[in-house]
Length: 162
Image 1 (cartoon, helix red, strand yellow):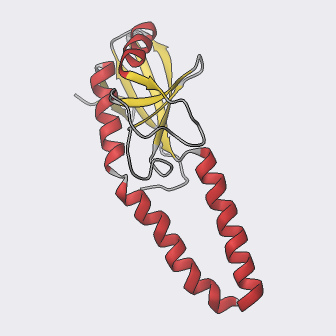
Image 2: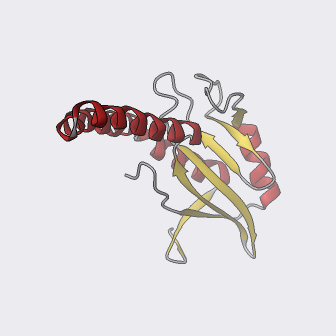
């Protein structure tokens, strides 16, 4: 499980890029707010689609800011479409979390010294890890969604998993 890192994920679909785009638009509800994501949708995923790629997430009622997004691109291939992407945190949440850690822990260090950092770092880091564990099932949900929607197979080491 990565919190701020990126682990590339690749799928291969026999559909064309236009078919993949149409299927994604049909299954996706536009996510209206980037900073404060909407909580509920009647469709399986929420997100945005641009000419350069797409960003999707599972609609959830709890911890939507910490929910993983799948950032992907669709690229034409000789036999269909390559869907390449990675999971990541909402960039606004990432920036806010880093800012919060720097400000909060910096002020604690200058006010109380080095021992205070340990007692604050453990609960603060635990909060982020706990929030990631609570939304961990979203990753599996989104991967299954991509496989179903694009009729795709996961690609690993230049071979398609059957």
